[in-house]
Image (cartoon, rainbow, N blue to C red; front, side):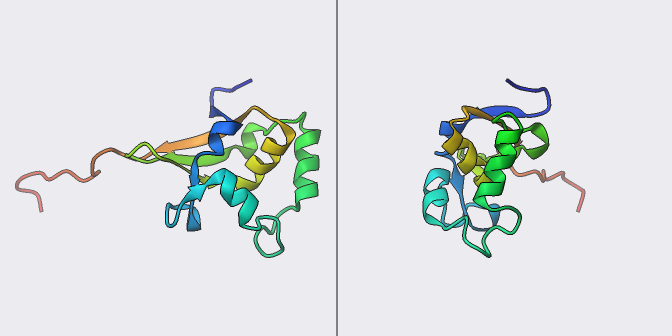
Amino acid sequence: MGCGCHEWHDTAVIGDWLVGLGGNLVHPVPVREWATTAGIWEPGHYERLNHYELTALIMAAGRTIECTHALSAITYADQRVGLSNGVHRWAVASELGIERVPVNMRYEAPEPAWTYVPGIE
């Protein structure tokens, strides 16, 4: 399973990635921990679908996460990976035993994007 438009990652490995407040790594915790302790299905936390509805949609799609609903993540310069969007999809995929899911992965530049050029200010 795969496509040419996304990276595909093991669901178990994604569980070890980090998630933080606002999609960045402020007070990061592993995705697996966040999904089980942060009350992600409580009203007000996730406004789109409840657990039952999201599970039904993934089941109807053939027990897969389609590319149009890929998770979003970033690999930071220090090689940590942060999941910025998709904790709920990951949680359901993990519960259903889905082994791999599509991820829209961004990579943080290892050096500052701005380079000093003498004479240009």
